[in-house]
Amino acid sequence: MNAKTLFRALKALLCLGVILALCACAQEKPPDDETPEPPAFAGSFSSPALGTLRFTGDGKSIALELTAEGAGTLSLPQGKTEGSYVFLFRNERWRYDKAETFRVILEDGNHNFRNAPDRTNESTLVFYSDGGEALTFQKDTDAP
Image (cartoon, rainbow, N blue to C red; front, side, top):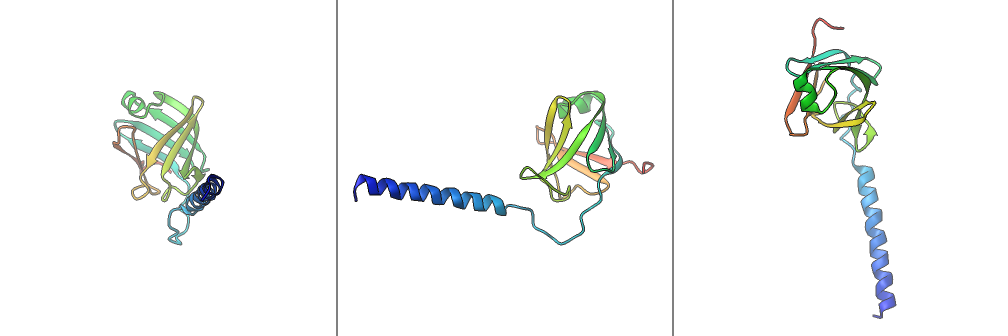
C-alpha cells in the first residue's frame, strides 16, 4: 500500500468517525417517558440559608433575593436581582424534570448549575453548587 492510498484510508476513517460522533450526539436526549410536560415554576422558592428565588410562571423570568451565604455559594449578587432562567439538556431548552443544567441569566452573564432532575419538581428545585453541594429550594406554601 503506497502513502497516497494510506492517506486516503485515514481520511475516510476520520470522516466516518466524525459522522458517527455527530450521530451519537444527535441521539443524546433524556428518555421520553411520555408524561405531560410539568408546568413552569411559579411563586417563591426558598432556602433558609441561601435566600429566595421568585418565578413569575412564564417559564423565563426570575427574581433572586440571596443572602450573603447564598451569594457566596452561588457566585451570584447578594440582595435583589432580576434576570431570566432556562433549563437545558445538551444546550437545548428542556423541561426541568429531565434537564441537566439550570442556567440563570443576569446582566453579568450566564451562571450554569447542574440540575438534579430526579429531585426537581413543581414544588422543589435542587441543583448543585460549583463545589458539588446539593442546594434545595422549596416552594413557599403561602405563595401562589
